[in-house]
Image 1: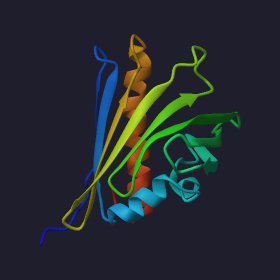
Image 2 (image 1 turned 45 degrees about the horizontal axis):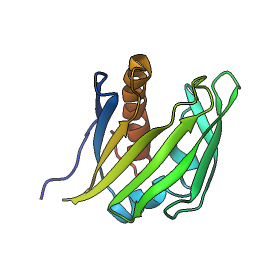
Image 3 (image 1 turned 60 degrees about the horizontal axis):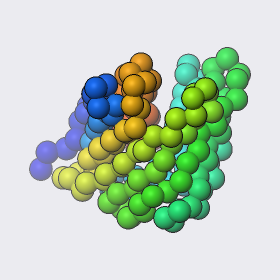
Image 4 (image 1 turned 90 degrees about the vertical axis):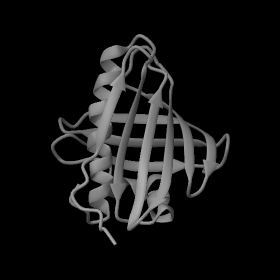
Length: 160
């Protein structure tokens, strides 16, 4: 039996297609990881003092249900991200729209989370798409997803 150790989050952006893929292996069951992503528990792990901190999560976890997070950047500026759940298949898959208030264009993208049971944990794959010609946003979100998945992993005590 091989334990998951020091698995870092990895992300790659395909700016020509306006999408990115990110992945990490986490030492927790798919059920636990799904709950951490789809409940108030998200405020415990999404963010850090040197970047930004998510302080509130609300959501109606059903197809067509709305969700919203609020937080504060490291310089004290408030922010919000919101969307709608398109697919809710616990603990295997979650698809949601994503719109953040600091984007002046109001672009709505789509995130697909896949939670795959693996030995000693869960492999999470995130596909974030719909960036179109916003190449810089696509690239910066790839970097952001590496941070987010590392925070999620740390929530479960892994050193990723």
